[in-house]
Length: 168
Image (cartoon, rainbow, N blue to C red; front, top):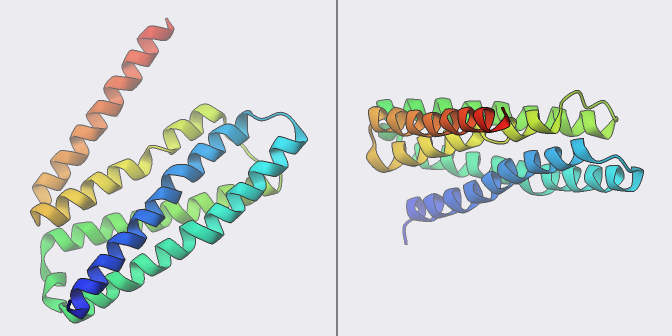
Protein backbone atom coordinates (compact mmCIF):
# COMPACT_ATOMS: atom_id res chain seq x y z
CA UNK A 1 0.00 0.00 0.00
CA UNK A 2 1.33 3.45 -0.87
CA UNK A 3 2.26 6.10 1.71
CA UNK A 4 -0.70 8.19 0.54
CA UNK A 5 -3.19 5.37 1.19
CA UNK A 6 -1.65 4.75 4.63
CA UNK A 7 -1.99 8.45 5.42
CA UNK A 8 -5.58 8.48 4.17
CA UNK A 9 -6.49 5.40 6.21
CA UNK A 10 -4.96 6.80 9.39
CA UNK A 11 -6.56 10.21 8.70
CA UNK A 12 -10.00 8.55 8.60
CA UNK A 13 -9.32 6.36 11.65
CA UNK A 14 -8.27 9.31 13.81
CA UNK A 15 -11.09 11.46 12.40
CA UNK A 16 -13.53 8.85 13.71
CA UNK A 17 -11.78 9.00 17.09
CA UNK A 18 -11.99 12.79 17.12
CA UNK A 19 -15.67 12.79 16.17
CA UNK A 20 -16.47 10.19 18.83
CA UNK A 21 -15.22 12.72 21.36
CA UNK A 22 -16.93 15.67 19.64
CA UNK A 23 -20.24 13.82 19.92
CA UNK A 24 -19.77 12.36 23.40
CA UNK A 25 -18.25 15.27 25.35
CA UNK A 26 -21.23 17.61 24.86
CA UNK A 27 -23.50 14.71 25.87
CA UNK A 28 -21.49 14.51 29.12
CA UNK A 29 -22.08 18.25 29.48
CA UNK A 30 -25.84 17.63 29.24
CA UNK A 31 -25.71 15.17 32.14
CA UNK A 32 -23.19 17.24 34.09
CA UNK A 33 -25.45 20.31 33.85
CA UNK A 34 -28.29 18.21 35.32
CA UNK A 35 -26.32 16.67 38.20
CA UNK A 36 -26.83 18.07 41.68
CA UNK A 37 -24.67 15.82 43.88
CA UNK A 38 -20.98 16.49 44.57
CA UNK A 39 -19.83 12.95 43.78
CA UNK A 40 -21.53 13.10 40.37
CA UNK A 41 -20.11 16.56 39.73
CA UNK A 42 -16.55 15.35 40.44
CA UNK A 43 -17.04 12.18 38.36
CA UNK A 44 -18.14 14.22 35.33
CA UNK A 45 -15.15 16.53 35.71
CA UNK A 46 -12.80 13.54 35.52
CA UNK A 47 -14.63 12.00 32.55
CA UNK A 48 -14.68 15.29 30.65
CA UNK A 49 -11.00 15.98 31.25
CA UNK A 50 -9.92 12.48 30.22
CA UNK A 51 -12.11 12.51 27.11
CA UNK A 52 -10.95 15.97 26.02
CA UNK A 53 -7.22 15.52 26.66
CA UNK A 54 -6.89 11.74 26.24
CA UNK A 55 -9.05 11.05 23.19
CA UNK A 56 -10.42 14.16 21.47
CA UNK A 57 -7.32 16.33 21.35
CA UNK A 58 -4.91 13.58 20.24
CA UNK A 59 -7.52 12.52 17.66
CA UNK A 60 -7.76 16.08 16.34
CA UNK A 61 -4.01 16.60 16.19
CA UNK A 62 -3.31 13.28 14.48
CA UNK A 63 -6.22 13.80 12.05
CA UNK A 64 -4.80 17.20 11.09
CA UNK A 65 -1.26 15.82 10.80
CA UNK A 66 -2.29 13.10 8.37
CA UNK A 67 -4.46 15.56 6.44
CA UNK A 68 -1.53 17.94 6.06
CA UNK A 69 0.69 15.04 5.01
CA UNK A 70 -1.83 14.03 2.32
CA UNK A 71 -1.97 17.60 0.99
CA UNK A 72 1.84 17.70 0.98
CA UNK A 73 1.93 14.49 -1.07
CA UNK A 74 -0.74 15.77 -3.51
CA UNK A 75 -0.72 19.59 -3.40
CA UNK A 76 -2.92 19.79 -6.50
CA UNK A 77 -5.84 18.55 -4.36
CA UNK A 78 -5.63 21.80 -2.40
CA UNK A 79 -6.58 23.78 -5.53
CA UNK A 80 -10.09 22.28 -5.68
CA UNK A 81 -13.01 24.37 -4.44
CA UNK A 82 -14.51 21.49 -2.49
CA UNK A 83 -11.23 21.14 -0.58
CA UNK A 84 -11.33 24.81 0.43
CA UNK A 85 -14.87 24.32 1.76
CA UNK A 86 -13.82 21.13 3.55
CA UNK A 87 -10.90 22.95 5.18
CA UNK A 88 -13.25 25.76 6.23
CA UNK A 89 -15.45 23.18 7.96
CA UNK A 90 -12.35 21.67 9.60
CA UNK A 91 -11.34 25.12 10.89
CA UNK A 92 -14.87 25.53 12.30
CA UNK A 93 -14.55 22.08 13.94
CA UNK A 94 -11.27 23.12 15.51
CA UNK A 95 -13.05 26.20 16.87
CA UNK A 96 -15.82 23.96 18.24
CA UNK A 97 -13.17 21.70 19.77
CA UNK A 98 -11.54 24.68 21.49
CA UNK A 99 -14.97 25.85 22.69
CA UNK A 100 -15.48 22.38 24.21
CA UNK A 101 -12.14 22.82 26.01
CA UNK A 102 -13.33 26.15 27.43
CA UNK A 103 -16.52 24.45 28.64
CA UNK A 104 -14.49 21.63 30.26
CA UNK A 105 -12.55 24.32 32.12
CA UNK A 106 -15.75 26.11 33.19
CA UNK A 107 -17.22 22.88 34.56
CA UNK A 108 -13.90 22.14 36.32
CA UNK A 109 -14.13 25.54 38.03
CA UNK A 110 -17.85 25.02 38.83
CA UNK A 111 -18.59 28.01 36.58
CA UNK A 112 -21.02 26.45 34.08
CA UNK A 113 -23.40 29.06 32.67
CA UNK A 114 -25.61 26.90 30.45
CA UNK A 115 -28.62 24.63 30.92
CA UNK A 116 -28.81 21.00 29.89
CA UNK A 117 -31.14 22.09 27.04
CA UNK A 118 -28.47 24.44 25.70
CA UNK A 119 -25.96 21.58 25.69
CA UNK A 120 -28.43 19.35 23.85
CA UNK A 121 -28.42 21.83 20.94
CA UNK A 122 -24.69 22.51 21.26
CA UNK A 123 -24.18 18.74 20.87
CA UNK A 124 -25.67 18.85 17.36
CA UNK A 125 -23.20 21.33 15.83
CA UNK A 126 -20.59 18.76 14.73
CA UNK A 127 -23.30 16.78 12.91
CA UNK A 128 -23.49 19.53 10.27
CA UNK A 129 -19.74 19.55 9.85
CA UNK A 130 -19.50 15.77 9.56
CA UNK A 131 -22.28 15.58 6.97
CA UNK A 132 -20.74 18.39 4.95
CA UNK A 133 -17.23 16.96 5.08
CA UNK A 134 -18.26 13.43 4.13
CA UNK A 135 -20.41 14.58 1.22
CA UNK A 136 -17.69 16.97 0.02
CA UNK A 137 -15.01 14.26 0.09
CA UNK A 138 -17.19 11.71 -1.69
CA UNK A 139 -18.74 14.02 -4.30
CA UNK A 140 -15.75 16.38 -4.65
CA UNK A 141 -18.26 19.17 -5.29
CA UNK A 142 -19.38 22.06 -3.08
CA UNK A 143 -23.09 22.08 -3.94
CA UNK A 144 -23.89 18.54 -2.72
CA UNK A 145 -22.13 19.36 0.57
CA UNK A 146 -24.22 22.49 1.02
CA UNK A 147 -27.41 20.64 0.12
CA UNK A 148 -26.65 17.84 2.59
CA UNK A 149 -25.94 20.34 5.37
CA UNK A 150 -29.16 22.19 4.52
CA UNK A 151 -31.18 18.98 4.67
CA UNK A 152 -29.76 18.16 8.11
CA UNK A 153 -30.50 21.70 9.28
CA UNK A 154 -34.06 21.34 7.97
CA UNK A 155 -34.48 18.10 9.91
CA UNK A 156 -33.26 19.77 13.11
CA UNK A 157 -35.56 22.78 12.61
CA UNK A 158 -38.53 20.49 11.95
CA UNK A 159 -37.69 18.48 15.06
CA UNK A 160 -37.43 21.66 17.16
CA UNK A 161 -40.80 22.88 15.87
CA UNK A 162 -42.43 19.54 16.64
CA UNK A 163 -40.96 19.59 20.15
CA UNK A 164 -42.25 23.12 20.69
CA UNK A 165 -45.75 22.20 19.45
CA UNK A 166 -45.72 19.06 21.59
CA UNK A 167 -44.85 21.13 24.68
CA UNK A 168 -47.91 23.35 24.24
